[in-house]
Image (cartoon, rainbow over all chains, first blue to last red; front, side, top):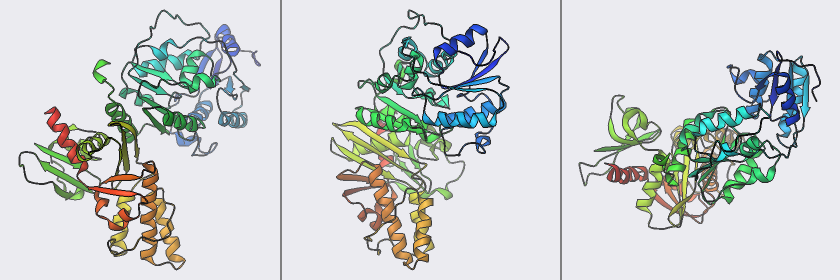
Length: 257
Length: 217
């Protein structure tokens, strides 16, 4: 599956979720995996401006910065239905701006791993950290470990660039949308992505300028108690205030955790 | 107990220990930096109080006190932002808070009145409008219109109507709209809405604080 010889000293960047065959191979050779969608390199996001428009998905702008600054040996970037068209175009740009092999791939995996973290009682911050870290491994989950809880709130969407907004949510917040697909290792499962629980107040989140803003807005309108929210680079105080007011006015019991 | 809504341009105060005495309005630029109140909301509220209430929460609670209906849309047009709550069956059904793209609408309206020496009570609602999504971007429409020969008053009126229509769309195109904020006193603005408008004045958030104070303290 791999196109270039990799070993335990190799440093490989991934954008989106490459197919499990690729992750298995990287795990097998012991390569270090860097999730380029996350803000790893601490430099101003505006440094991506020479390569991408400033009005563009902040996740992919972040990926460009990481690719430029991390000393990598290869990049695997999902450009299929599990990611987005923007990633397809960014893969073209990668090939021009980095001098390492860039491998576009299309993740259409359908083997469902389950999504225990999405439904368990845990701080939303920790939940997202574990789910996003899980992308780097092909190991099956211990489904006994994280028992499901009864939700009091919901968060639908992709992992945001800025996790600080999770501080506002109670521990019994269930995760829906693409992040649930991510945990399930089926990022192109649009049926799972579109699922929500109408019983719990849910924030429908999307990164600004992402194609998923349309789905987030659509589903929020369908949900009896849904809030559509898009955030660009960082979570502003007004965005946090909006979430706080939504949860409070929707009767979400903070004290129950 | 002193309650306060610290807005971007104006602050509103209510002293609960002086019943019968109404709210007091003060320009934000005149507020002493060391001022402290008991319970606050508003853009600048956290700086001046130990107990802070989210602006949308204060708006919603104020609406619950002032509007005797189970279904309604309440829109607050401030200097810096616009926000709304929509209720169905007595419960929150929708809400929105537009700071970035609704930025500075109220502030710009007030600024333009002074700059062009206009009186909004005397300006008729224009037939035409500008497509305005933000106060700052909308200004360029005014300058373009004036340079093309349209009068300053007509240009500003189109701008104000554009802001009203943008706020109306933001609130979900309701048949009836309850309006909160200082723009309730702006006749040109209120008459520019293409729906039934019920102005509630600029003290709705204070009313919400009053309710919250009764419940918590």
